[in-house]
Length: 173
Image 1 (cartoon, rainbow, N blue to C red):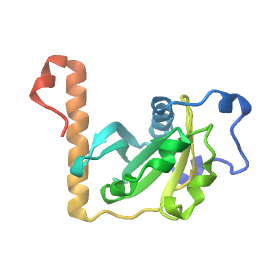
Image 2: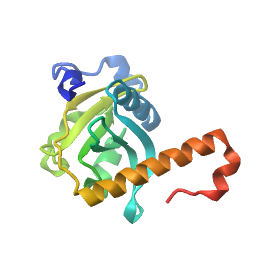
Image 3: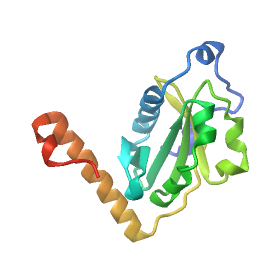
């Protein structure tokens, strides 16, 4: 499915009920994962990256593009994050994922690179892309490293989910 087919109508705003019951990060992740699954994008959460960083969500779309989503559910966390630009070297597309209760206007500011970074609004049940992420292709060697790391992490997690006794033999790096 084309990305533009699941964009949110810009006139849509959070309902008062949604604003009164803010979404937490795990709820936002669940909503984004549902959106991605419907659109053949498969991801994992808390993905370790080189350099000691950890992406909130990282995945691959049907065309092989590597996608990172940085989830923010509080204004303080959003404005206080100085490390997020490190993630840009690990993906073709970068999205901010925010709860429905947050004012998304701040993400239009130049410091948040709106010309490069997409925006997803999510709750615990679903999500919608407000602004598509611009594609900045990874170098082929970097893409290979990122896709292999993502695949190995996903397979390790699936194995441990089936057999928790395997956990001591393979840690997250």
